[in-house]
Each structure stands twice: as C-alpha cells, then as structure tokens.
Length: 179
Image (cartoon, rainbow, N blue to C red; front, side):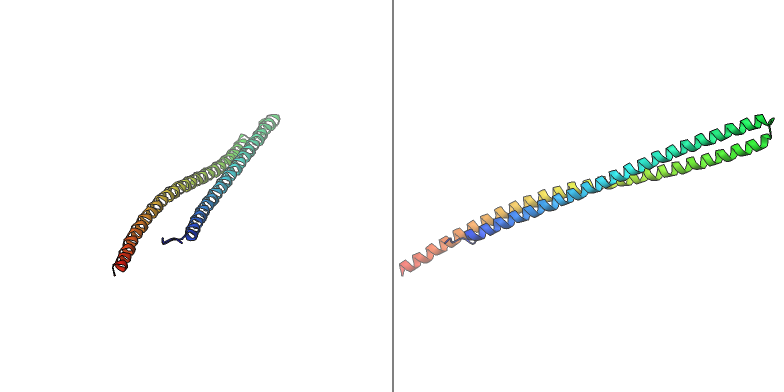
C-alpha cells in the first residue's frame, strides 16, 4: 500500500476521468465543426437557389423583352399596311411597353439587390462563426496550459507534503526509540 494521497486505483480513475473529459471536449468540438459545416452548406444551397432564381428572372425578362419587341414590330407593320394609322396610338403603346419593361427591370434589380444583401449577411455570419471557432480554440489551449500548470503545482505540493510527513514519521520513530 502506498503512503501517497492518491492510490494507484485513484490515479487510474483520475487518468480515466481526464481521458473522458478530453474525449468529451473533442466530441463537442467535432459536433460544433459539423454544425458549422452544415450551416455553410445550407448557406451555399441558398446562394445557389437565389442565383438560379435570378437567372430564371433574367431569362423571363429577356423573353418578355423579345415578345414586346416583336409586338412593336407588328404594330409598326400594321401601321404601314393601314397607311400610317395614328402616330399617337403608336407612341402611347411604345410608352406603355417601355414603362412595363422599366418596371420589370426595376423589380429584377430590387430582387438582385435583396439577394446580394442576404449574401453579404450570410458571409458576415460565416466570418463571425469562424472567428468564434478560433477564439474557442485559443481558449481551449489556454485552459489546457493552465490545467497543466495546476497539475504540476499539485504534484510539487504533494511531494513537499510527502517529504514533510516522512520527516515527521522519522522524528516520531526517533522519539519512540529514544524513550
């Protein structure tokens, strides 16, 4: 039997506890990393979805523009076929078509602006999460160093107490032999 404060069995339990604590910290770290990866994947999926929507809107705008252009050409042709029907009617139609095109263009620009701002927000959130992860890694390293120093201090203190006890035991044995 040992005369130290911790027996071999207790040392084994302490080592097992420390290993379990280390394992739990690693598991939490992996879980957080996986969670961040999922968030990034979701953000990329949203960005892809919004980009596809923007491309669809651009295609619709181009199609609408082509249709309107075709209508205008037909109107001009009819106007020529009917001996230059009314120039005023043609100008009104052209103005309405231009306003609709401008409205659609403005709507598309607004949607693009909204998507762009959402992208910036997600990008900033990603950067903040990355900074938090770095801070947690730094905090982990600091705590690990403090733990190591505390262990060393305890080991020194235990050694000092053991030496004091050994001296005290030898003094007591000397006093018993002397009596």
